[in-house]
Image (cartoon, rainbow, N blue to C red):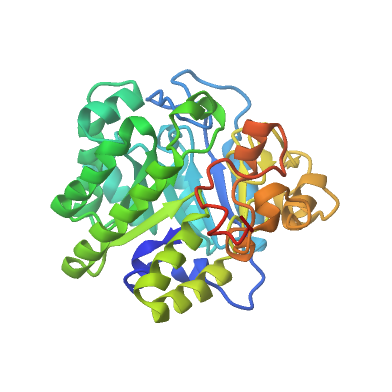
Length: 383
């Protein structure tokens, strides 16, 4: 995640103490896909969630054992995801346990099931943040979600959270089909006083693998960042609590740095310091995923590759195993990268970007990430 309001505007973010840590061994932020069941059927769902009931998902007792292990392992954050996590009946029981054991708990949801009563429960349980997916204005979002009324239900969920004091933000996945709406979503943020928005770049995994041709072109991605920073600069002057981030395309960091270098070299120097602390893509190192069946993945987009299963070994043991080939290579990837990624002068702040996108495009984990929109000249390659 790249905090635009911090690096561009100098405003502190609520999770910056986790994002920019110095001299501390990073335990992974853990995403747990609590269920594959969902009340929507989103076209870009990496989990291929569906409304039907799925078998062999973790029981309450198995989930409690997992949470206890994560707490002992000192994972900094447990993110309850899905499918739709609010369809899991024991969600609040499990979240209360995690909170009591000292884990910071976060919820990723489509927001359509958050009634006033659910919002009160979220507040009482102590969720530090609720991220609600919204991928366009009404018509666009409802198309993405394959359900009419999904937009209005999600906005109502956001209002219910905010009115009950739950820190809430938007999660917006960028594609060609909703790029125009992305520029207008700032109006919604300003009108509803939403304190946070994360713009996700598309990762070709799950159902999103079929959307590869709908990913932003390089010039579209650059243009979006250009326009976004202008709007963020304007909005941050009106709302110091606003937090805007981009996610899942780490070339955003050097692009922001280069823009700042032209406008404010002092800010650029501070941004570079933060980007180096963050280290770029941390799949398999600072980020982990546990799916509905207990399979452990380097991140939530590696659903096709498991590094172990918590039914056989504890997560802490799986994650600490330095002999697992994919984990070992992801943690020492710089000498394995090929092409432009291997030669890029910004490798220390990007870390090769997303290996899943490279694999999906070139059938080669170590090939360049096709979503990198920086020019050869910008990354330091000779003409």
